[in-house]
Amino acid sequence: MAKQPPKRRTIGFESIEPAVTPPLLPPKPAFGKKPSFESGKTRKKEMPEGLWTKCPSCERTIFDKELDENLKVCSKCDHHFQIGARERIHSLVETCSFEEMDAQMQAVDILGFTGAASYKSKLEANLKKSATLKDAVITGIGTIGTHRIGLGVMDFSFLGGSMGSVVGEKLTRLIERCTHKGLPVIIISTSGGARMYEGMFSLMQMAKTCGALAYHAQQHLPYISILTHPTTAGVMASYASVGDLILAEPRAMIGFAGPRVIKDTTQAELPPGFQTTEFLLDHGLIDAIVSRREMKTQLVTYLDFMTTRKSTDKAG
Image (cartoon, rainbow, N blue to C red; front, side, top):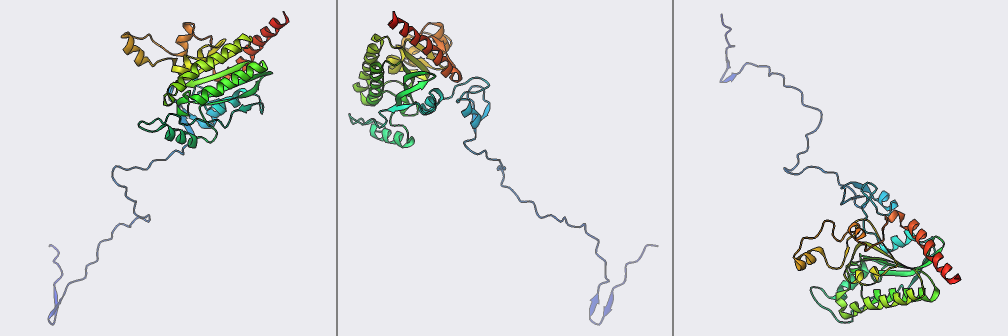
């Protein structure tokens, strides 16, 4: 027989349902509710800035401290990052031997140039950006190995390393002082060319610097020109290309006008590697390609040879 449900009892006017034991529920977990995230958003670890740099050539991620110790050269593919003028000076000269010249000389807006932005505002922005740079070149007398030399180093971070009146004047004063003291001159170039904000005054620096180097050469004093990425236009067309010895860093862009301008002007296809250091070495414009890590050692070797020859000429 089927089991009959319990009968409903009635007391007075109230009815009482029979007691039924509720089923046991599974225990609740001890941990709290998982926090919900908005759709489309995930947690991502943020990498602190100023610790790593990605090489544009081999795409390797390099620890900044390692990169600094290697003179801003990638140890895997030998890519040369741009480097500041003061960093480059410290990598070449002996400790505490560099005596800067004309440190307070800085450009002024003579012509009142205006365009998308005024020349004056651009100068002010660049001066604020770097407390140690007054213009696109640092000049002075220093020692490399055992050789006392005049050294001029351009900095691309200041208005693209462009050559205006101050850059031309500082280099000319350096060359003339070295001519007077009988010292070799080394100029390291990185520039977009003449500073067009200064009009013809910037173009005059091409002739002025080359004239000073001509007097320097008459005294049979060495001049070494070092080309780095990029060296173009008015700088390449003047003092950068008239060295007794012309060196260059690997894979630097070197030329007068840009490849696109030359291609559009000549209506001809440019050869592979056009305007690179390696192409220009093959065609005789430069004398040697020297890595930044080996530059100081090579300069000492070249100066040993060039100054010994000068001493022999004097003795003869």
